[in-house]
Length: 410
Ligand code: HGY
Ligand code: MN
Ligand code: MN
Image (cartoon, rainbow, N blue to C red; front, top):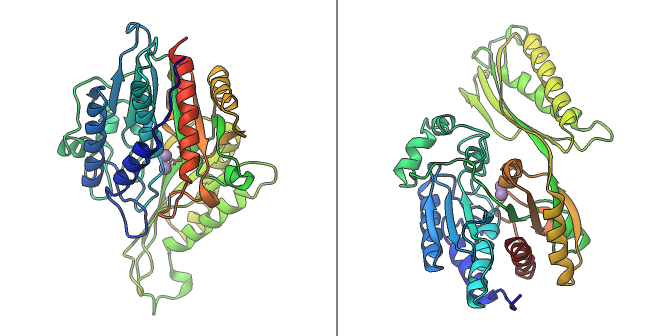
C-alpha cells in the first residue's frame, strides 16, 4: 500500500480554527445540539467535506455524510466519524477529534493518490451529547433503527423547542432517509474521557466495548409553603426526598465488586426561592455498567428508594426511564484491525472498555464496529479544561488511517 501520512500542520490548524466556533473564555466550547454555534460548526464541516472532494449528503436527522468513491463503488463502504455537538461549556476535543480525524484520513489518502477498493464515508452524527435534547446519540440512534424519526423530531428542550423544528431552523433537516444501510464496518476515534491512558502514559487504546446505561427522569411533587412559620412536621418538601435519592445513588454505586457508576446531574427546583419550601423538584439519574444486570438491579433499586422517599415526605412522584442501552462488546475483527494498525506503527497501547456512550454503541448493532481512544489529560472531559496532547491525536489518527485502509481494501 502506498505510503500515506497525516499532514499534521493542516490537521492541527483546522482543529484550532474549529475550536474557535462557540469558544468559551476558558478554552472550552459551547455548541449544544442545533444551536446557532452548532449550525456554524456544521457549516464548516460541510465546507471542508466539499473542499476534500467528498460527495456530501445530509439525512432527515441532520447527520452529515461525506463519501469518497472506491475502485469498486458497489461494495459496502467503510464508515468512520463521530460528532460535533458539545456539552454546555464542554470540551473542544469530545467528538471533534473523530470527525476532523476522519477528514484528515481522507485528505491524507488523496495526497498520496491512494485509492481504496471500497468507498469511504466520513460522518458527523447529530445530537450525540443528549444534553439539550434527550436521549443522547439520537442521530445515530435513528440511523440504526433504535428510535423512529417522529420520536426524535418530538424531543423537546427545556424551552419547549422540538428537535424537528430546531433542525429545520438551522437548515439541516435533510431529505435523505435516515435509516440503516449496508456498511462494511464503522470506526470511531474519540478521546477516552477517563483516566486510564493518561495514568499509564499510553498514547492510544483499542476499545473492546461500551458500557450499557440507563437515563431516568424523576419528579417529586410536594407543597410550597413559607419557610418560616411552617412547622417541620407539616412540611412536604420535594428537596428532602431528592437529597435522599442523591445519597441512595451513591450508596448503590458503592456496592463492592461492581463497575456501576451513577450520577444525579441535572436538578430543577420550583419555585427555587430562599424562603419557600420546594414544591417540585425534577432531576435526572444516569446509571452505567458493562453488565446489563447490574444496571437493571440499580434501576429497580432506585425505583424502590424513590417510592419510599416519596412516602416518608408525603409527596407525589413521577418516574420515567428516558433511555436504556445495553452494554455491547465490539466486533473482534475490527478490534484486531485496530490492534494491528497500532502494532505496525510500533506504539504502546492497551485495550479498554468505554464508560462513555458513543455513536459507535448504535453502529455496533448494524455493522462490525470498534473504536480508538486517545488520552484525556487527568481523565477530564465534559468540562472546558478537557485536553488531549496533539501528538496523541496524531497517533490516534494514524491508527485510524491504518485501520480504515485495511478494512477498505478487503
Ligand atoms: O453520555 C455520554 O456518555 C455521551 O457523552 N453522550
Ligand atoms: Mn463524545
Ligand atoms: Mn460527550
